[in-house]
Image (cartoon, rainbow, N blue to C red; front, side, top):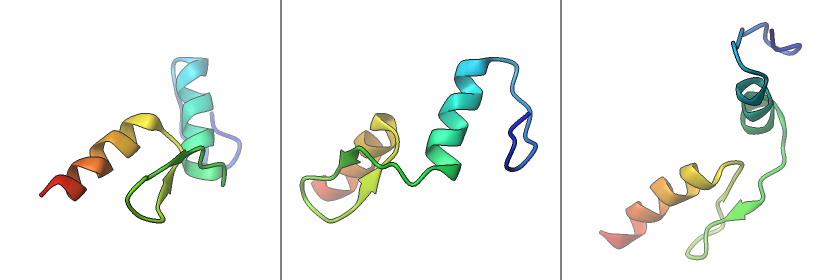
Amino acid sequence: PCPDCTKVFKRMEHLKRHIRSVHSMVRPFPCTFCEKKFSRSDNLAQHLKTHKK
C-alpha cells in the first residue's frame, strides 16, 4: 500500500508511478506553450492537445 494514502497496487511500478504523480512535487515534463508542468509524459501529451484547438 501507499504509505501516504494507503491505496493498494499489485505492481511496485504502479505504486512508484502513483507516488511520483500524486504525492511528489517533481514535475519534469513542462508544457512548451504555457507554464504548466506534469509528473508524467502521458499527462503532458494529453494536455498538449488542448493547445491545438
